[in-house]
Image 1 (cartoon, rainbow, N blue to C red):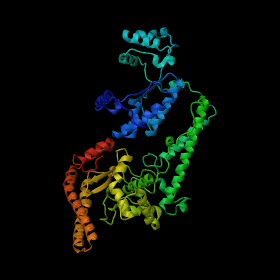
Image 2 (image 1 turned 45 degrees about the vertical axis):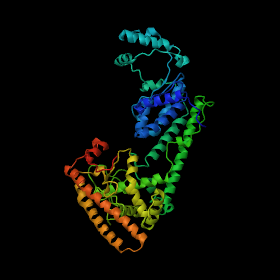
Image 3 (image 1 turned 45 degrees about the horizontal axis):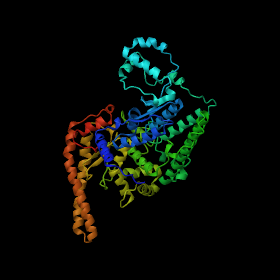
Image 4 (image 1 turned 90 degrees about the vertical axis):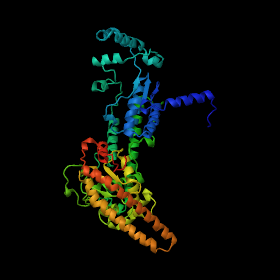
Length: 539
């Protein structure tokens, strides 16, 4: 539908209002639904605000807390509507921040009170302890809201500054906000569900959600990557050394969890709809998008396997023990038998093969595939990975290499909400020198080691490659081939130049022998190691 015509005055008003929005912070936006009902408008507003916060660079977790504390407000005269709205907004917040229920927060969703059962005389001891102005203000509020649950927003109040009253009540330990002590919760008008069905379903849902969350490395209880779960158990024959088969098994497991949780959520809805007599207002169906466990996602899950591989290279994980193998403290080589981590805390990200040892990421990756899925299917598995990650290249190895060089750190940074545990050294746009290190293995001699054992040898390899390319260009007679060789020569020459310019910058920071303290957090340590010199990729 086309927009209707607007008068010049309307256009003027829009332009003037846009000017006033230039300096408005997203935290200052106030959205209120004065008749919130079941909270569906608040939930929709939550989604819109989430998009705004994400566009401003907030993480989903931070945005959920900000929206709850600052942006959405709701009122209703009906206590049951308040309970439903409160639950709906809290569940929407938990969708983006799974820890929200365990954090302190202030959700501005309230029920308009009714004070007709309150006797003013019973408040006389309190009135005597308040100042005259605060006492009069509180008396007026009690009188005005005698029929609050009937008149709701029809009740008009003068614009008063309640800060003094609130301050006095706080000093008298009369907290005006919602309380969540056992006695407060116990006084809520909740209808009891006596046969235990709801409790059993909730307990099962918690377990399903926990299993799902623990399948990926963001979880503290992460044990091993799900695509490696069955390479040596009763499903080994079904997988048959093929990563694509392993994904198919994982996909079936994830779908089964998804469908079970959805069915359970709908069963809970039926229980509470019947319990509260809401059959004419609500239906039990749950949309797929509102089911909180993940289905399998081929690209996401394959990329997460590549991230797990990087963790194995650095010793963060081990194929021989579940969970974290190293996150600081004393290093134990006994933990690593099947796949031994790199001796040095560095993994080069070169766009071509320059080394034939552990310094080359694809050497390490092929070893990883051989150990986990067998030598027989290494190439087949690499072809599958290359197809899924979608990087254009001459062959599968180059496609995977290109992903590590171009995209791995971007994905890692996003997955860890700009608090990466693997840090990327970068000399610039030509990728003359690019490498990963593991924060928890860093020591003050790291940068000196990088220059001596990695940067200088790579410089020599560039110089050797340039010499060969120059000879090939001179000898080549086929115009198309000659042009490609000249292009390669130009690229490697630019990489060498960039690397040489990077060396003195890296040396300056290396000479500082900077110490990092993990207790300071990623951002503080990242800035400390940058030392104003930009040796790391920008977060």
